[in-house]
Amino acid sequence: MRDVPTIAYPGAAASASSAQISGKLQQAMALQQAGELVRARALYDEILQTHPNNFDALFWLGLMAAQANHLQEAQQLIARAIEINPDHAAANANLGTVLAELERWDEALASYARAIALKPDYAVAYSNQGNALRKLKCPEAALASYEQAIALKPDFAEAYCNRGNVLRELGQWDAALANCDRAIELRPDFADAYCNRGIVQKELGLLDAALASYDRAIAIRPDHAAAYCNRGIALQELDRIDAALASYNRAIAIKADFPEAYYNRSIASLSLGDFENGWIDYEWRWRTEHGARLRDRRMFREGQWLGRESLAGKTILLHCEQGLGDTLQFCRYVRPIAALGARVILEVQGPLRSVLAGLDGVSQLVVQGDALPAFDYHCALMSLPLAFKTTTSSVPARVPYLEASAQKVQHWKERLGEKMRLRVGLVWSGGFRPDQPELWSVNHRRNIPLAKLAALKHPDIEFYSLQKGQPAESEAAALLSTNWDGPHLTDFTRLLNDFSDTAALMELLDLVISVDTSIAHLAGAMGKPVWILNRFDSCWRWMHDRSDTPWYPTATLYRQEKAGDWDGVVQRVRADLRSYR
Image (cartoon, rainbow, N blue to C red; front, side):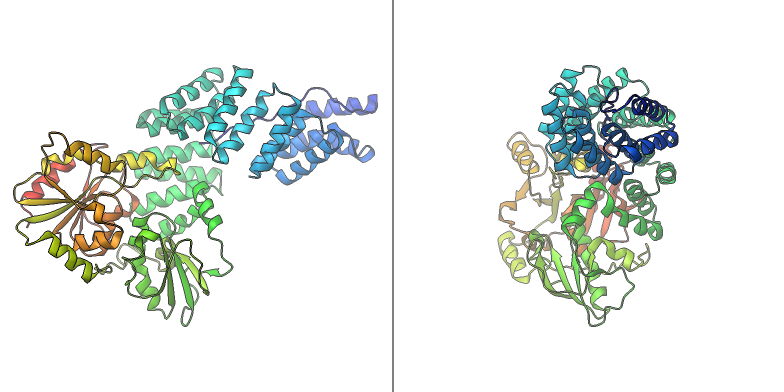
């Protein structure tokens, strides 16, 4: 969601040294506000030639540079003006806005604080301070700033819009929607408010309403690239992928360096099996707001390998970047990398250390956060399909590429005893990422309430919980302590300390039934039969409208036929389970 910064325009000139200069300043300001920037700049330049320390000319010229997105020039001009008049509240506030656009958030906050100290009733400075605090992941403080701005200026549409953004991040969906609505009520032509309202509506599952909001934003401002991009996301959730692609393309046509549009276009392309274009666009993930944070933590002097250079006799670091399931899915590329003559250092998340210790082709395994040995090249695991020019027909899908510890399998074999019935593992919930609110609604859509799995009960099947993590474990405990009429769930999860323990238990199961989470990837990587309960707006890796996947030959996909319809999925699984042996 886009925060809306507000430029503060002061009133009349404050430092004219003569009637002639004052007249030129007034004329220049009028031209600037009328959009005649060339003529206005000429007058400012004329003043500064004879009076290089004229505060007003420097300040207003700085505002003009900011409007033209010449941010470095704007910062320098406004900073020079403040040196001349440090007590000018609007200059300090606008310097903060320019610094915020340069993503120098701490400096921006300091400028807003100075502006507020100089003018305690400065609503604009409070609103913009909230934007910076939100970027610095201080949502509660941001909310307080927006509320102070609104208290000072009750008709402040931008502050309502921005408060809607932070309320959404705090999970207060209805309040977020009400704030967007209030911003639109105050400013019916407020395109950004319509766009932000669409995002909240989409998160609430009101996809048709979201599309209407995006369309209204575009009608007001036809060059609203963000509205086109967000419109594409809503269309994709509605399974209108071709229309989504068209919307992303329009966003990119308007804004050629729009990372989120390229990234979302990659998801649509990969979903349709267009791997050639999809992998190329997927590299834009590093430049999205979330991906940039990952890249900032993983900058290397060594070159990135994307398939061009020879790896014979070289050492390459393959590093994890996203979730545990992503690492399990893409570590399959270690073997073909090693086959190119490379010595492979594989960096993984801590919970995967043991299960990946024996992965074929790994020369050295390191845990994310530990010191790294020397290497010649690096590549993120999820960039390897691009490096290998992977298509749907060339996915390295030989399984198993992960194996359970024989010693641990023997331990579980003794604990489980003689097999009398079909053994099925269950997973109904994926991990929750509190630091990624953009994924909360996806998590909600991919998880299935355990109560809905009651229909799988069968006297000839033993069910084993493979579900780790909260709130799913508490959900299970609460449900099973009541009059649960579903299958008896044997639960050894307290003994599963990491994925190698899970893999060993899984080795003794006949089938795993799981939502789209890391356990599904582990089962697929081990070559175990796995039935994946798949949401309607399927993740790109499972592609569009398929019951199989090129990534895991032993996987079967059960996709919702309409959004939220888990009952239909469970009934199909139940029918197939009755005849499964």
